[in-house]
Length: 307
Image (cartoon, rainbow, N blue to C red):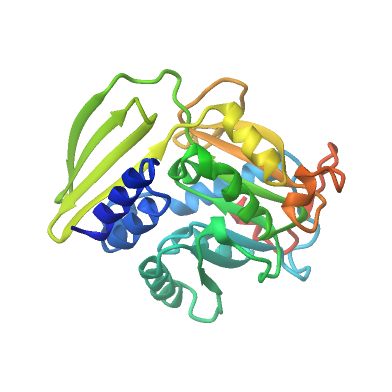
């Protein structure tokens, strides 16, 4: 039995499906294969588009390209560090957090190659277990459907952990997906670059189960397609105010964003960190929420050509 199988079995035995650690175990096993599949993503273009979103919605301001200090950014779920490299090249002081040490080993290697003169902190930690040990940042980002990796019962703790990484008044941009309609039970198989994906939607758990097979790999990943209300309630309980939802059309480089109230398969949720020292204080009514008039992050020093 693999570690991934053990995590699934532990979840079944406890009455939850799968266990809370199933995706943590999955990414540790999948890390050596990750870049084979996701290395084709145009990461610099993704970051350029996200910078457009921040600028066009008044979250980022640019006053002087030489102004210090540079804004601080954390990539939550940074994986092998490709987005970290692009954000750093755009002018941010970056750090990364991931639950997989193998992923972070790859990130350290990639950062050393791409940014040999930079010292970029990397933290091995599950975002659901973050403690107040970090210097808080101005902006957090999470790419590649990050929130879909957590079961509904885990969303609030995920949002609370992220809030402990961000200054009050700071922001979190998080990539997530929703389904317009729940599919019936389905099973489909894809093969890509020697890796086989067997996907199945389990209607009883509202969960998309993906089993990845390759030489030396047999591991299962889980996605939950939460609805808009579930995302927003977890964010509010976790210490965040919803700024807006944006439908993301990455293939439309000139106009990739639409402010949207409809359900879309590609979304970026923009959240503002409430003005509390601890995210739990907001849920208990101890501190005021982030003001409706959005605060701005000074991105003086961010390269103009990045936007």
